[in-house]
Structure formats: C-alpha cells, structure tokens
Image: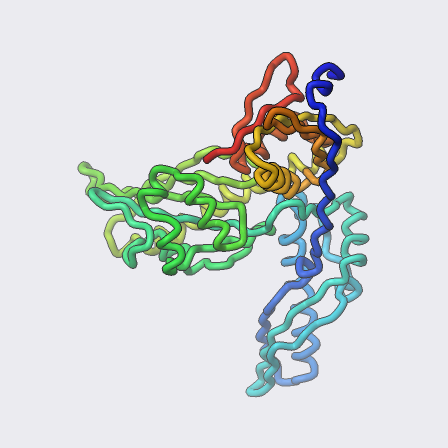
Length: 368
C-alpha cells in the first residue's frame, strides 16, 4: 500500500466533516385528532388527553424505531413524562362531544433514555421520505401524468402517509413533474430523470411501481400485475411483483387501493433491511480503511465530486489524500464492509470497478 500511495505526490487535502443534522422535528407528532363522547366536559377532556398520549407514543415509535423492533417496546404508564409540550390546534366541546386536534412534542432526551431500556437506539442516517412513481399500462397505452392513471390516483389518496418511519409521497403531476419525467423515461428506467423527480420532492429515495392490466381470455377477469423496483439509498434494488384480479372495471379503483398496502409492505421491508444493515455495522467498533480512486477534469469538478461523496450519510470521514494526473485518491474509514460501501456508492450514481486482489481499493466513475 505504501508504494501505491507514493504514486500520488500532491499535498494532502482534508474534507471538512458534515455538521450533524438537526433532528428536532423528528420528535414532533402533528395533527392528532380525538373525538370523545361524554356528558361531562371535564371528564371528556381528560379522556381526550389520555388518548392523545397513547396515539402520539404509538406514532413516535413507528416513526423512529425500526419495524422489526417496535413490538419489543412497551407503553409506559406515564407517557406524559416523555412529552415536552402539547400544542392545541383546535378544541371544541358541546352536544356531549369533545373534539380536539393537537401537535405533540416529545422530550428527545427522555424518550431516548426510555428506549435504552430496550437496547434500542434510533437511526436517522438517511432521508426519511420516499417518492412513489406510479405507471399504469394496458394494451396500447402507458400512462404517467394522465388523469386516467388509476395507479397514480390510488397513491394520491395516500399522499404524505407514514409507514414504519417512512414518509411516503406521491407526485402531484405538476408542470415541473411533467417537464422532469416522461412515461418513456420511466419505462426505460432513466435513473437520472427518476432521481431528479425524487429530488423535486427533497428525497433521494424512490420506487418505480408499474401496474399492468390485461384481460384473462378464459375467465374474462381483469388481471393487474404490480411490479415494484425500489431505489433506496443503502438498500438493494430488488424487483418484486404480485397480481390481483378484478371482475369488472368498476372494481379497479378499490383493487388499486388494496395494492398500495401491499407495495407499502414491500417498501417497508426494503427500508428495514437498510436499517438492519446500518444497525449491524454500527455495533462494530472496528473501522476499515478504504481507498477510492476517482478521475476529475478540473479543480471545480474535483470539489464537486468530493462534496458529493462526503455528503453521503456516514461518509463524512472522507479525506482527499492526493491528486496526480487528473486522478484523486480518497481515503474513507468505515465500519461498513466493502460490499455495503459499493452498494451505497452505486445508489449515488457511481460506477465501481474493483481488483479482487485489492478489494479495499475502489475505482469510481460517475454515471452520466
């Protein structure tokens, strides 16, 4: 390795580490609604607060704890001890009914200390939003932004829903969306265009989900095959599919609604795999050293590349060791294994080649 490093003769340059992200908003559960029927308004209000506490605790656990660990967390007797404050958005009482809406702000330190009892440490190392890009196909037609895209319409109903800590977003079909991505771009899996649409919604994570309808000649039933390809940073991009049947066109909207739940389950599993990989590698205190060789065309291009890599979560230890002949040598210290490092870089649109004799030396190039 010393001989390898001697090939790069320029002075060492250090990339500044990223500042820690402010996660305060992660501990807020917004717009909890309660309706308590009771002829005593004081009793109804107290019951409303108890219900809000329970709902908020359940939602914060779903939001910050990996789904495979959520069942191990028991509800404390005094949930209020974990809450910093509650904001009233609306409160009405009359006709033997108490109706209210609240924002609940959890005390970060108190909540994390409570989770320590269950050996759980929440992870916020990746963006928490994911964009669903729904295509609808039938004989002679592929629809993306059209009004009669039944698959897009089903996801629009679930806009900004939350499942296992993921904010699941549906595109609105705005002019910007239409200018960014066409149906042809989506069907040909143009990663650059798909990624740009996700960035329009402030996320790096997206799934391409295609609903393809055809009629069964024998039974005359409508078969819809749903294929999902997730692009989640740090998780494998493995396609999965399932088929649902409808007896008539009128049943298609409800069938689509049902299919969204199955896709959410698929996405949750992929998300959980990413969290589990992070949790397993984070347990190890042993750091491995990696060397990345990246070509560059100018000082500006080098700065852009180094910024792109160092902005990847958990890659903030990145350093530029040296430059030579329009190639830069980076070092990276990480507890991740080399396969996971390669997977993460691939998700960020880098092509990687590797010498089996020197597996910790990776040659990178950027996808165009």
